Image 1: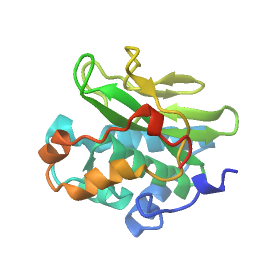
Image 2: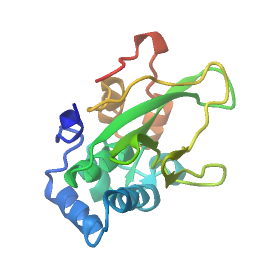
Image 3: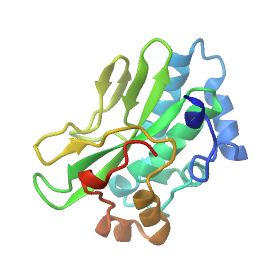
Image 4: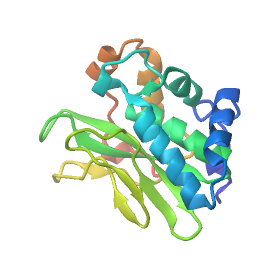
Length: 198
């Protein structure tokens, strides 16, 4: 059942030499899978700049491009984190929240994060979006410390975990070349149409 979450893919391209090398670097000397998973998480959270926080181009989607350019939206950062974990034999999935773009109410957008399968804890959600004032995600299993809490009835954690990114996400990241264009067209999905597994 875990094999889809260990496989490479178009966007989780951990067989790319850049990703494979970084995965090996992060694994060096790690005593156990929790230490290794934390290293991967902290690298993506802290060393890859969130596109909007830094208003930084180019728009990235594939894990290898995120690593090469050092930047990405939350979705792209989750692709890189999944790739680094899978390259090290740790099952990793993609998952999503639906959040208000503003303080409350419409418009809404998806937010991308990860789930990692740890032998001692099972599936554990982590969010390497990148910390800033008001956002403080962390890795401390089994307690979840995500970037964003669900604040209102109209926000939600979308059900399921996904081996590959949702098409509604990759379509936007691959269609627009500028960070501002992506921000003006953030992906969204009506909860009733969201796949539980993909």
